[in-house]
Image 1 (cartoon, each protein chain N blue to C red):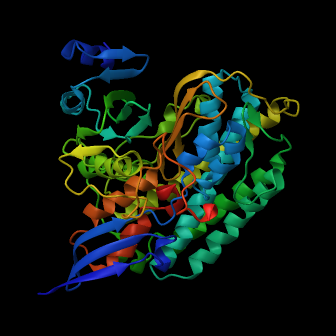
Image 2 (cartoon, helix red, strand yellow):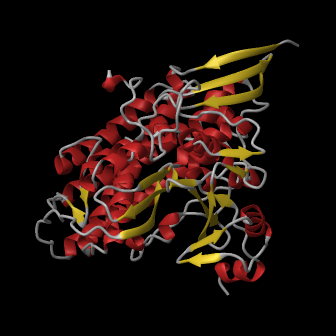
Length: 360
Length: 142
């Protein structure tokens, strides 16, 4: 049979960004696939070398606009470790709470758009309705819906938190997740589109450096929150699944949202029972230390880190972002071989790739 | 015995600098050892970091062991060419392309090295310290 080259993207609606896949087809089946990235390259790492630490701080939310808090945390934590700035415990709990709310918002968006990719329109409206409540809360606290610029060196920008709102939002979302499960989890169409499709074996996942929920869906226990000091006093379970197919990636994310809600409730309890810190003042950095720092964070799309190399100047000498989606995109080369054309978007969607994070 | 000590016994030539292993010529062997040894099994190469120090480029390979839940960094200095590690860690392919694109380091053995972010016709390597930022091809420089 003749081979046909099909060009998917860069403006394909299901890629949620600008990704080009060069797919070679034999009939309905994919022979090979070559992902082509770089359409959204903004030079984040070069910009860091030109801007001072404070000037670069609003930029880091833009690395991944769906989970800005995580990257903010990674950068702030790197600068704090480098300059030995102590962060109050209260601020740490606020950070954890914000990050977990952000994780739920990010997973909700994934859930809606993934179902949309598979052809179901209505789940997107439901998940966006709940995501909206979280974004409204973020807007109330930080003044922004997506690019928060809320974490600062040494703490958080404001400590007016409206904790009762958080409890209301979380309880509502926990209730709605059950509703989503009623619609989606046992839906025969959803099952036939996702069960046994796009299976990642353990070896393949490790070889291609997959992290986060995608790795845990392959049955490998790896969650960086176990090692992060801000999660030390917080109890949570790590969600895992064994099959490694699209369906198990869905299950892992659904249960991860419940775990995040559980973490948020613990944070709210702690914050309510402890005294507020005084309004944090911006820490001005005068003496920049020399050194190299690796600041890791478990983002919704995998293990991310910020490598910061300082030579004692007011700007970083080198800053490097490690992001989860970058490696998920690379995996497509292996994963799509042999699958059918209709499954490309089912597999690609299940990996939860966000393109700004890939190109940086 | 921790991981760094085990590597030190096997490869006495390495230097240990806080949490980083520095090597001059044994990078490939060390990575092979770290991944292949059962007690260590550093199975994920998280990324490759390149830092330009004008007269050489330092490459750092942060590894993660899901088995031990530990991390280790291996680094080496390179002028313009180094052997690829994509036969040990296939995920290195994109990282090597990125470093070739932004730093101009060639990876011997990586057959499909291409520019990943910049257009294929681009001249120069943007993350080098001597890169001229006043490039007329950039829209804001007119």
